[in-house]
Amino acid sequence: MTEPASLVISGIGVVAPTGIGVAAHWKNTLDRRAGIRPVDPATAGDSGIRVAGVVSDFDPADFVPRRLQVQTDRWCWMGLAAAEMALADAAISDFDPYRLAILTAASEGGNEYGQREIQALWRDGPRAVSAYQSIAWFYAALAGQVSIRHGAKGRCGVAVADAAGGLHAAAQARRLLLRGQADHVLLGAAEAPLSPYALLCQASLGRHSTAGAAAGAYLPFSEQAAGWVPGEGGAMLVLERAETARARGAQIYAELAAVASTHDAHHPADPPPTAAHMAAAIALALERAGVTPGEVDLVLADGDGNRRWDALEAEALISALGRRAADVPVAVPKTLTGRLNSACGVLDLAWAALALFHDVVPPACEDLDGRPVIAGLDVARAPRRDANLHTALVFTRGVGGFNAAAVLKTAGGPS
Image 1 (cartoon, one colour):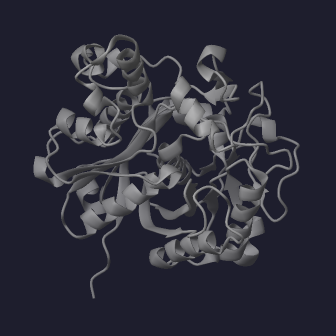
Image 2: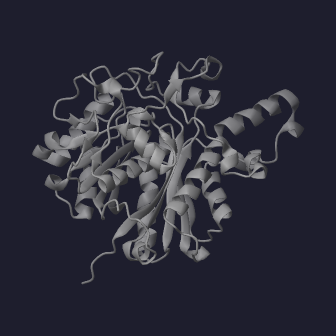
Image 3: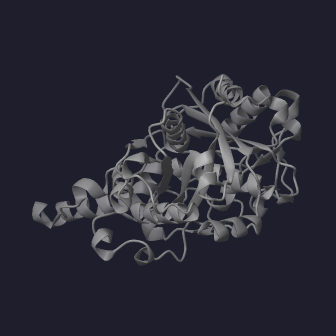
């Protein structure tokens, strides 16, 4: 019986509140340099959202031609930039276009562009609306634009499952590679949900932090948790067979060993009565990866920031990992960026891969320092270097009852 193929992450591109490019993002993560900023009151409107994770110093002209900028929304600009960086990081320049697949996740789409054009329609009539409105708002626009930009003629698609969508895209990427339907998969997500209409839509859930200052606004697993902070940005990853990456001399960050998902089947917005479905996703991912609970060295947590949801996640982790749960560091570096909707899972995959590659547990923001957290969890506040990391678990959830988990393993280290 042949061994299953090892699928590895060989390229990472990041555009996030923690930095543009993987090097800046990782350095700022370890320095705990948060990108949470006040939101312009005119933008926040009546949403009640006062702070958000903001991508600073991003100039779309560095990555996107002007003629394409007018056809697309900010979320596409950031996704196109991350895709370009991921391909460059993986040193992919010569490829069969029919063997490069593009898989993305989305939950917001081009809200800023859409709001502007709808306002033009209301104010000035149909002739004032851009012809590009029909494609710029569409949640599949990023996948299509990345494919066009890089001449990728293989499978192209988008997963829609809120924060779990990125891991759903990763699961599809694994299937394509294991079935021999692609040589490389560029997978990821980006979001730009900080326009007035987008903020109002998110606030309608009633689960966002309404803190007036960045300090203490987003405190997952803390007794003072009072909601999540939204954020913009995202990440793109190159996934391929290990032998393909090694033959090209590419740097390998980590192996993506397994992905699994479940659904609460309970309610579109309310939490389920138990964590059974969350724990089942984790257990299934571990089983598919051939990993025991005792072999998990790091957890990248969903970290909703609402006490009921955090308690359920803690319950799921304790149920799935057993006695080992209290000894495994739980990382919530998204406290530095806010929750990036569909890009949450992909950015966590990037953080997990970098953690394994550098053997460092990524930290949370300084606001969690000194605050008690849910019993039974070892939430990492500061970076933990030389942590002897070999296996990482990523868990995330999406609004609507989606649960997804992924397992990553070491595949070498920094040269």
